[in-house]
Image (cartoon, rainbow, N blue to C red; front, top):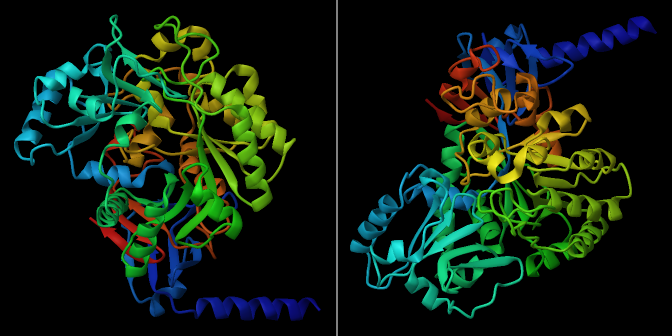
Length: 542
């Protein structure tokens, strides 16, 4: 009997070694993120799948269609960004990123230049201004009015949860002194009751409703631009956090053309007609486009002081943020999702929003489960609430660069007590809670090397502060890489198909210019992608 088994195994091995492979990567330092085989030196690919990973795959050399000598370079699984806004990045790539602009005057000059080249009355749009770059004071409509008065202007804050309008845009939206705050939103007003031009969270909808909708052609172009940028950066999969029917139609059109270098896990953008349609039809699952989750938004953002807190902001007494949806609404959607086989992913930044979301989830899930509900951002969590993530099997979908972007002012907003539960990745990991990482682009920069670096060091790209900000919450390099690969795959129910380099999985991997697992950490942001392989095809090569 033992002899028969041995012969069968020998035959199987011979059959594998004779298999023709389309791509053979050799002489590499492969970090597989496979705990059963953490390292390898070569990868063999047949079609869109990995057929082998090991130290010596020379048995495939004779039949390989293409052989690549990695010359000792590091190879990692294709990176997965677990929270993105794809069309937002594409649109940003066609305009100017205001992220690092240091003054209101510079933004006003940009608006003036845009007005000079546009037709009369055309909207001027932009995004990523950040008032913390010029001292912390919000700008005003008057700052834009001095640059242009006959064009409506609307500029979205870097976090996407506040907007800056000029007077013309306010007029078109019908926003006056007596306009009340909409539910879940706030119209900032001066001491006389006049709107300042800053709209927080759902108040933005008053102006956005007047902005001409993007065409299908524009959306396809933005998605295509973004996908090619991601390929250049080593991203092979993303979780698009809040899509519309127009977005899904654009994705399907691009995939039908056969030239879209990215896998997408799309979250339906809240309750509505699209959600109702999917509740009837059930999840859509494929290797390229998956729709099996809904994204809710529980509160605003910390930078615009819209994140829902239990206590007032330390630097804004009387303001504890905005709870955009009630617990009952989250619970109702969660029940619908469980019944129809969907996942729920809820944006929650403040400690109040996190607890409300966890309690709503808990009422539906009851205890440990396999539903893989998520909290997006999970930025400020009351210390007793970390255990609720574990008890309800909730995934913490975090964005490491939020910590290093916000560290300049987070203590001012939160005070020392709340800071203990802020951006606290180590607390999640020590409780066995799965962490999926991402960028939230275009809120942050899309380069995943910045996210890996932030997770490992909790420093800015100059290496400040020494030792890292609240350094006890850092991830190890192995944990950070897992959060950007297998963690993201698990968060989308895809860990059996992607997230690690092992036989049977999709051939998604990246060759790097330097070894991020051993190089001095300060060098990680400087690491470039030499090659991105998606489904066995090279979609980017430096």
